[in-house]
Image (cartoon, rainbow, N blue to C red; front, side):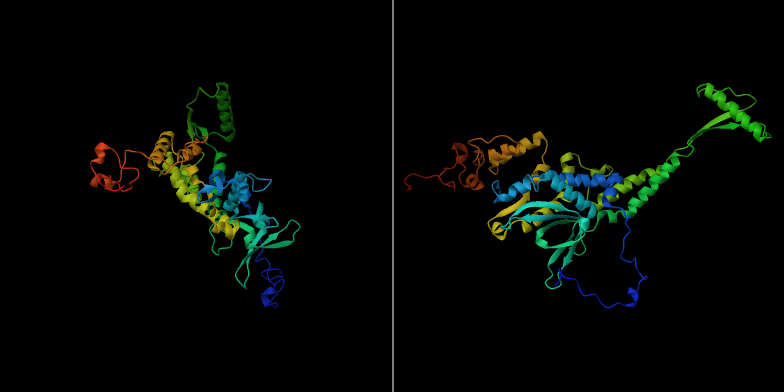
Length: 416
């Protein structure tokens, strides 16, 4: 039964005869690999490294009701060691490099006897082929092992991070989208190198008598060069009406200088990056680095983070964990840290406004907790608008009674 058994081959037709359309579905072994392309193109390397390093550095934890669960078995796997060969940073960085070059990144879940994931192993995406069961539409993956034998696993055993997909199964390789742009960039660079080998500086000798033979011309040039070399290429005394004029030409056409900028913009467009992240600041209108980072975060990183979180929550958490409120999330706030003054003002407003605890602020600044910092605090100089309108005398004499949330002051004769 599919996918474990082979499908019945249809009867041979005329087009299946030997020698006819034989190479229709074959690819050359010399087809450029993504790892060679990323090493040979600075713009692609810059784009991939920006995304991969950013995703690798964002902290990732398992939460329950907005609180990190350090004792959960998945916490070590997410935040420290997905497998014995990778740190959490190296794992996410490598997965993003594969996703942004091959279009897909796969990690195999290794469960224990109880089904709990104990490690995540990165697979070579060129050896993984998604398949769909025609009976129920479920997704399976065929993994080609080192010995050449296929190994088929169900879809929930693989974590799949991919680029845009037309069928929801296999992502499109960004390098294939950029193939024509990269070929054009390569041709322009080769043309520039050829121009560097040409003449870009010389001296033109003008002889008043044009009836000289070739031997006389060669002798005249040799005497000029000899005198020119003896003077240290600085001073030459000319006789007999000779004149010398120096000329030079640029080794690279000025229009060719725009090719690199165009290539960078196209790479930035395909990878959904702001152009200034690849060194093009011509259209940048932000006044602070924080605003530039916010654009990069919203345009590029947040969609990738959402894909990672959805895939992890769907395939690593059990239905019981999800029902109990467990969630796997990235701490993207680590990317939006402002300067020291703005951070201090934000923390002060958060504590005075009562929506952050002092120890939460201390934790974000990598400081030890305070014994009295686990309670929300508030400022006494603010009151509800209802009290200011209905009891204006409280603004002169004090604040509302703590036991009366509506701000009604007890009067004489009233019952307590």
